[in-house]
Image (cartoon, rainbow, N blue to C red; front, side):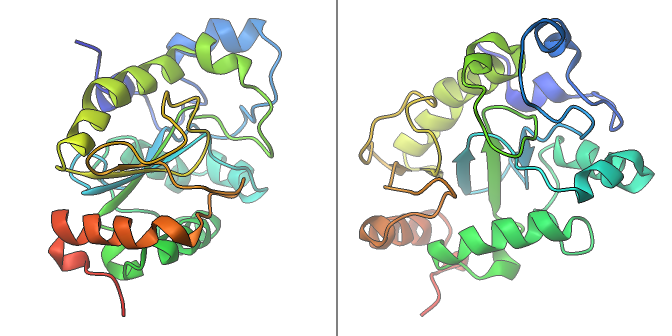
Length: 219
């Protein structure tokens, strides 16, 4: 059975700028990842979240450089990689908070409830200003671990309607189609920022209401 994504990152120190299994690839291959930042394969309570959003990789802002050097920042990433932490608050990472809050609005879920019930997963854990390193997704052990876990555990849980999983970036690289899958696995039309079109929102909100009634869409 493929290794769990959280198991793969377990015990990696908060100050680590990369997963040790990725070191050879990152040293030898040309890429544009910001390795002076800290890796973020996931954000939020991935172990228990009824809603999981899929993206390509975390974005980069200048704040990440200073954050990576601080004890508080290193502890933040260690906790996030455990899959037990809430989504980032304004105090923990103001830019990450603003980013996820803007995407949550499209789900119609209250932001205060979302932080404890929504998780985000990235195929690549490494930050970059833009993404042009598609060749790295097959080469990096961390990306392969993520995809193996998603396809063996996460997607089946969505297809059996245990979780709502929404792909908001790079469906083809997640191994998904261009339309809604079965159950509660959704592949809506999106732009590069991960904002989805309106046509699938009613079905997604209905699914959220089914798996998490306490997250009923806002009126």
